[in-house]
Image 1: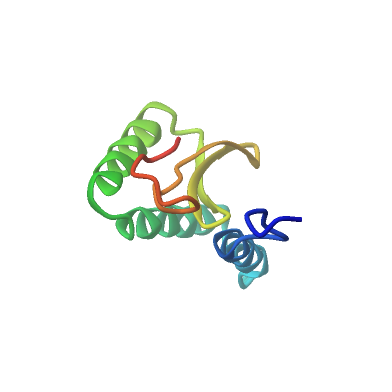
Image 2: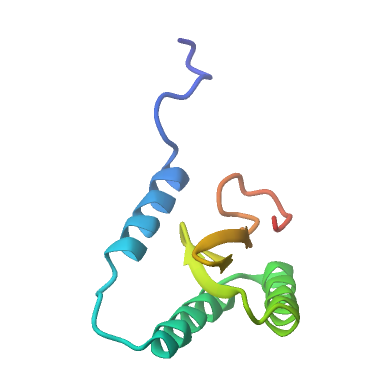
Length: 108
């Protein structure tokens, strides 16, 4: 294997896996369905607020469009990224441009 080839996961991939594990292990205190939905929405909004520059503006606008036109979708974080699910299945997510490769474009 040449030195240019990488073995195992990158640091960014490992960080994403740790974020996902934390989401799964999050405290399971007794909450009503409405409380869980409100907490998930808050988590998504906090994640979007952590984006920078154009990514933040675009993610905020997408969040507004998605939540207003498809209120049946559940905002939640997925591998540390804002995502929207229907019946527990992720339909789309917003990836910060610098999440894995440092490029300058947000991915949806």
